[in-house]
Image (cartoon, rainbow, N blue to C red; front, side, top):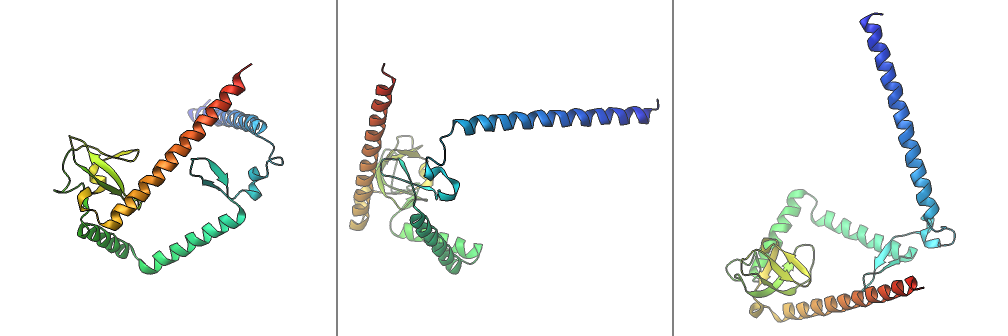
Length: 208
């Protein structure tokens, strides 16, 4: 038998083995999917689980999730599309979006907020804290090493936050901070109550 023939036979054997391996993998995946589906509740008994009737969920004040109705989902999506169109109109290019970003940072500095605190908020100081991604303002403090800023139930790098001395807050900023902290307290207590109740129910369910 020539070398070419030997190589062809070897290549054919390898392809055959690969196909057999793929078949076994597919069979294993299908078996796993079947076990998972068998363990799920019947979608017909739980309409919210039916794909045609599921529109997402909303997170409640206690951290639990509730299904969205079709009207709620439609209203949210309409709002999302409207805001997207507004952003496209006001910031049609990356350059325009970056310019807005620069303007926002400049305005925050004019209002007395500095990323990382600047020279106004020093290590160990209490301060007001804001962070990109949220419009919330919270009381916090920078640790003695200047490595972390603590606020609400969060810990972050000061360089990622906008800080301002508490004494320098405007009346509007202080009012907004108080509202944010009150809402955060309500949410935290509600979630703790829900988890406690859930633990009690689970414990009672395990009793003989």
